[in-house]
Image (cartoon, rainbow, N blue to C red):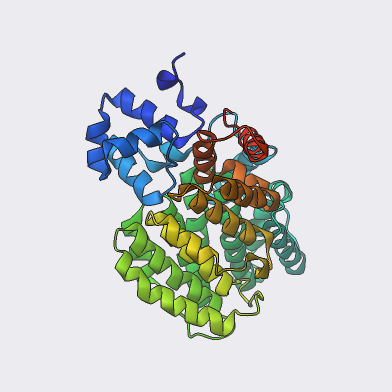
Length: 405
């Protein structure tokens, strides 16, 4: 079967999927590129795997031009790489949320102290990049927590604990798993309903941030900005500074994604000031949030990549020490951003890009092997790979990510 007419599940990269959909629509390169605001040559290189499609704003623009959902472009091939328990756990989480929605969570009623310890343990596992352990434990924990919540005992504490779980663990595990967009949204909308029932400003802020962040990733820029604008920031203290940084940083990212990068400068300056004042030691606060100078740097790298400025992303990266961050998952995000930026430099620092992505893979294998943006970067690097040690390293990474060598 020709690649352009293969089923969507077989397309290993975003570029290949984009070409198949465009051809199925009967649209020329020039038409789709023009609607998306890029040149036909740029789009051709994306489709041929010579240029990674790794910007949310451009994916949304191309999806709009093709009249499809952005999720159709970034979905993983089947069989998905680094699968393990992933597909079964995604389905188990979906079934757990279905059961909660109909009022029959189907879990165990447990003491609050037991649930609190389990939530803390699974949060620590997520931060340590223990993807499979979280996959195994999360669906049952969701059921048990909501079953106990339904009894009405210790209601306020359990509401806060459920918001914490869905913001810190469920949302982020589903994101790394590249779960369907509707499931990611269900998880954060559930967190927001629980926070509204709890009716406390920090819980509302945590859930609102999670909703906005998830909407932004999915390309729903206007609803995300509306959600952020509706949030009330708590007074800045040692216990709330991380949350304020999260929300303020997301305002900046929303501006970048929505094509208004000048609006990002002021919130990022505020974020950096608060993070430097309260988060310099890299300790988790009472809300379970860590947001210090390293996180500010990684966020600036992310924004530079979204703006198509890899040179600036690399410059920022050189002033960030990822080793200062206490959690492997966050260090992996730094190296993934750095590798993507290096791969895009005009001078082509491919060897350095491969080394950076390999460090990220060591820290968080699933993140690298399933992330659509990293996968497209690996595919781009493959088009220029040499028959040397670094080329062999790259082909090994591509193989583990399910990409054709």
